[in-house]
Length: 262
Image (tube, rainbow, N blue to C red; front, side):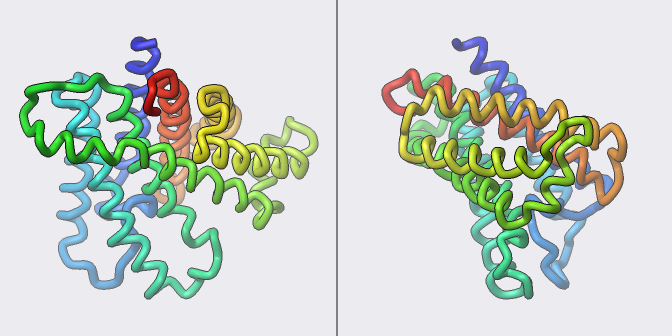
């Protein structure tokens, strides 16, 4: 079990790092991390700083150097950027904020924040560690991880019913019944997300969710990334890495469910 947790943590870190690294080439935040606020000063500097912090945190988690504390601090950072970046942007600036699709990019950051808390919960507790008082305080956020992640899962599932036709075009052409699979995937996401939130057959549900996202990674995201890795500011490539991170999050929720507190 511990080996599977470690592999999933590494996959999560690779996914998150793969999402932020393209920002270095475009000198601006990706849509998943900070919206295009008009007139934001020092955009390139803040983009580089955020990217380096995230990558350094991912490396620390992989090598397990103060990994539990680092994962919690990373989750706080991502949640802070979502609350004070994406949410006010959508409420005050985006003219299409009444559409769920306008919130979709930012929801990934909320899910990543949750994923960081889930990662922290998968790591063994450390006593007499540096910053132990801060660590004990931040550990109270761990149960929020699966909820933050599942909010995105449920709303993305709902989006399959709102935007059925455009989403159905993402189904590979060699799979018949694109509309059926779009509805099926939407229903599966909603049911899985709600089950994870309310702790219903948590281990089984999270495991099946992780497998489903992993299948999408292989048959949907990876082919699109190979076909057009750098188009639209590497959108397909970033989506591929996000699918890896979200699949790993679901697996970690399943593995954590064997403990008293998931």
